[in-house]
Image (cartoon, rainbow, N blue to C red):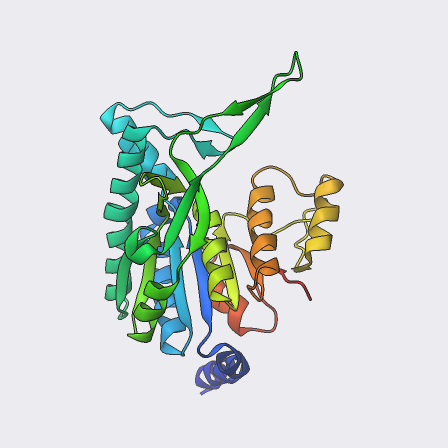
Length: 294
């Protein structure tokens, strides 16, 4: 009876959150590194199906960097990175689309189905969801201090988002699973960073939450303690004093951009923790770092 009572109390604690988020969209970025763990993938699918079952509209954007790298190696195609972005020539772009829109996307759709949900696999090319523009980067020569343009090839970022296909799918009871691929106005296919793609979709949908699953507990202070609530101003200060560095910087830039463009709040969360999404969304304690305008 005690165990049953504890379960009932947990559901009662979650009730206000069910009511608050009913009918709202949650955009979840699911990373390529997390996909290699079969048990974690099963738990992720169960969490997504549960969100849909309680009236929330989850939208999943997935990465796939490790899988793309493995396929390129298998095919003997060399690849290089600049500022964390894969330099993408035409051959690499074709492999990226094959892996992202094919094997990874359909594996996630199948996981959702096994967990009792209905998912539809999409990319930014479907239904005109995402129009991409070429990413432009510069680098500074350490000796001459002269900046020069870098050509990253077919690496893009969203320039426009039309959410019609997402809204149609969610209204039909489906869970959209989206590969970060888009078409440019020039007709070319562009590979888009999954965090950036998720942020753009969260902004366009006016999502209640943007969730970036990563491999750390969230944003940590200099002593290693978790920072649970941050504003864009807080993030700017933490970056200035060196508390935030490395790969966390572009993730938080995505969160700030989404919050400032219409997403209610963003969360950086440890995707390795079982059911961390549910702990974050449906408990007062939460489980990661929440970024909001307050």
